[in-house]
Image (cartoon, rainbow, N blue to C red):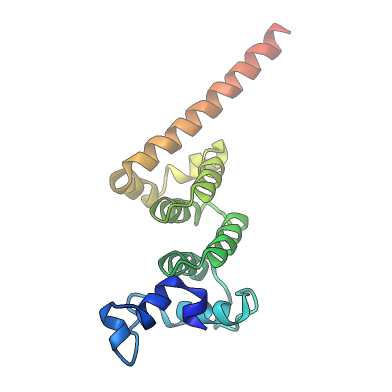
Length: 166
């Protein structure tokens, strides 16, 4: 079942790589509950009903998004993107934005940039330690977010000018 759903598992189980010759596959850098949710999805095509301690937290869905990308499970990656989008908050948007950038999700990245560039949200984000870390570690994302905010401010200024004239 693993090989049928994931080309990465297929290569590890049946390919010519070193793991294919082994009687087991070692999963590194993944929490047990993330792997449990990944397996649940592979066997059921659903991750929402996975029974996990603490449920499907945003952090777990972020980790599952990374795992879905790692194992080329596109449907799971899409489902995780949707879930991350609907649960965006001031506390999660920057982490989700970084993950979207790192795992080639243009759609989720754009949704995060739109959310974070709202003036109320941006004002709160700009005061966080995470925002300062993003500036240093991901300067291109910082530039894109600042540009979104600038574009939004320009748009609001133009609307105000038109209302004043009219």
